[in-house]
Amino acid sequence: MQKEYIYPIAMTIAGFDGSGGAGIQADIKTFSALGCFATSVLTALPVQNTQGVQAIYAIPDRAIQEQIRVLLSDIFPKAIKIGMVHTATLVDVIVETLSEYPKVPLIFDPVMVASSGHRLVQDATVATIVEKLIPKTDLITPNIDEAAVLAEMKISSLDDMYIAGERILKLGATNVLLKGGHLQSSTLTSLYFDDQGKVHSYESAKLETNNLHGTGCTLSSAITSFLARDFPMESAIVAGQCYTYKAIKNGMDVLTGKGRGPLNHFFDPEKLIKNAFLSESEQDQKNR
Image 1: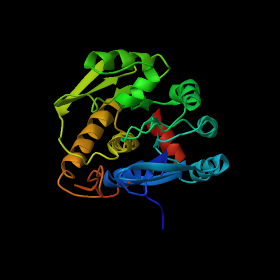
Image 2 (image 1 turned 180 degrees about the vertical axis):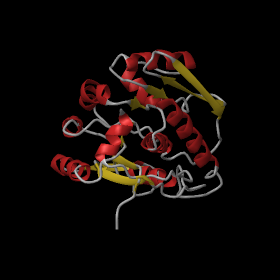
Image 3 (image 1 turned 180 degrees about the horizontal axis):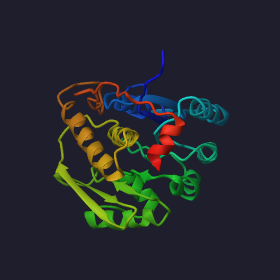
Image 4 (image 1 turned 60 degrees about the horizontal axis):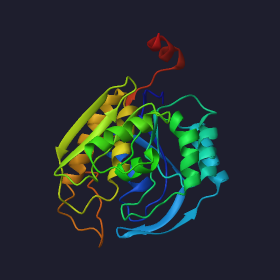
């Protein structure tokens, strides 16, 4: 049968979460709920549940490199989300391996501090992330704790967020979405620093719930999904925040585990999208 369609492909390069709320599991759930076909590369095996991370077991760097290569040689994504990269050598492997392939939008969620407050990466890894990974990404999505590490400053107010965002841009980031959910405020404010030098502010009511495990993973994956669906960056960010807010709201009344519960990723799932398949010559004509 002649192939007439193609799915929007989204790839995640991230760590495991056996409790199902964050990491690669949250990414796959989000991609799927938003109509994308998910592929995944496992970077680490944390031992965790809703109450926190107990230990982290490494995946061999060569195995990660081979996962990326075998997938990109066969099912090439429209957008890639990078999550947990916990060693400097792993950063090198990911950057060098991805450089072998055509450019694709890269969304980096710098998983550096667990919601329990547990530091997940060492200073040497942060330095390598700043030097090699951040300049390659199209969007970085730190929360307050992660932004504080990257900007090397304490963040305790909205004014601090503006300063931190500008500092992260100067590290070579193209776009920065600084999430303000950890600030002590009844309103959740996030700031998007775009590639044109503008700052966009988004506000929403903060939902009072303990079910917030995997919120950052979900948001970055939602943005990746919309980019894979050919949304412009700002539209993808707005749509991603809307999806994440609704996933939190629709999971507030459910008890899952004894700690921080997950979001409801499938509150209103979309069917897997089938786009018209274009040959290389048709794609070239479209792009002219």
